Structure formats: C-alpha cells, structure tokens
Length: 228
Ligand SMILES: Nc1ncnc2c1ncn2[C@@H]1O[C@H](COP(=O)(O)OP(=O)(O)OP(=O)(O)O)[C@@H](O)[C@H]1O
Image (cartoon, rainbow, N blue to C red):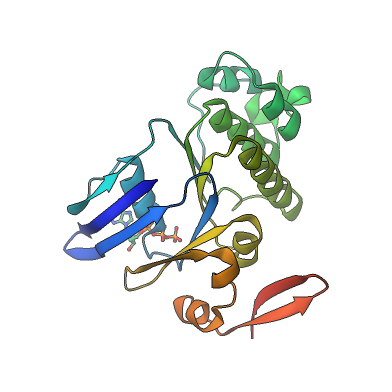
C-alpha cells in the first residue's frame, strides 16, 4: 500500500503540505477532491516522484505507475494503433473491446473527437499494465456522454484487473459514484481519507472545503450532492 509519511512540501516559501500521513488503499479507486489550487496536482507530482518532498517519505511506491492527465500531447502524428504500441506491442483484447477502440485503430489521433482521443489515451495507460494508475482530471474536456463512458469503462477494467487507481475529479457526484475511497484535500493542506459511503454524508465538511453550502438530495435510488 502506497504509504505517505509525515510529508511536507514548500514552494516559494509557501507551505502546501505539512506533516501529511496517509495510505492509498490497494486495488480500489480513490477519488482525490478539493478546491482549485489546493495542491492536488502537486500531490500527484510528489507521488510519481516528479517532485521531491521537503521532508517526509513516500514508501511502497509501485514499480509501474501510469499517469493520465486532462491534456495529453503527441509529439508526432500517430494512429491509435501506433500510440497503443508505444505502451505495449501486444494489443490487449479486453482493453480494445471495453474501450471500443477496434474501429479506431488505424485512424490518426488528430482526426478523432476529444472524447475518442481520451479513450485512446486511457487505452494507452492501461496497455502499460500499471500497478498504480493516476488520472488528473481525466474527464474535464469531455461531454456528459464521454464522461460517463470514460468513468464506466475505467471502473469496469479496474474491477477486472484490481488496479489501484487515484483519480482527481471536480464533479463530487462522479467522485462518489465511481470511487470506493475519497481523499479530501482541504485548504489547510490537511487530507482526510475516508470510504466514499462515509464521506458522502459529511455535508458540512464538504460544504466547508468547497466554501459552498451543499445538501444531499434523494432521487430514485441515488443520493445526489448539490449546492443549496
Ligand atoms: N510549477 C509551479 N510553480 C510555482 N507554483 C506552482 C506551480 N504549480 C502549481 N503552483 C502553485 O501551487 C499551488 C497548488 O497548485 P496545484 O496545481 O497543485 O493545485 P490543484 O489543487 O491541482 O488545482 P486545480 O484544481 O486548479 O487544478 C497553487 O497555488 C499553484 O499556483
């Protein structure tokens, strides 16, 4: 289990994290939520080793970590097949089928819609067979159809493979629907980790964190968080 111990991180004399200790549950999806600028992407950079902590340690970092962000850039024109082959020569049939990439394999990435491109990028990171998959706001530029398709297929493949996933999401309802655990990063730099089913009912805590009064609404068999 990835283990963050007494981690502190300063940037430009500003302390973003102070004495943070938390563990990332294995084989589950954890959603990292928190207001803009609180340090979610910075925490990810610390987890991947792109940034070094000012003090503290990160232990049990898995060997194969794959990262998918909202902006993914190609440095040369590639077809979907060529992109996937960069990760792994052998196309994974389950990934192809679940993401419905078969029909797109010989198309240039640049000719695909934003939603199709993001699914191809999801295929690219899954082809790496990561032990830990980190996604930083992966659905930001997708329409509702592709947001749901992306999260559903991610969830399905995660369940089949038991990959550990950490995903930054801004939509709280999506975070609660598609994760088992929540990491709530507060403005103070404090991080609260809890099962999604527990955190879902912490309306005051969430309202406080996002400086927005929230309420839980029951609708059919779902409970939805929305601004008051
Ligand atoms: N490369 C950088 N150099 C200096 N400051 C930075 C850099 N990257 C981020 N910051 C600052 O660090 C703080 C945390 O930024 P970060 O991007 O980690 O937040 P975030 O929670 O991911 O935000 P958002 O939800 O808006 O994407 C912010 O105050 C930001 O301005």
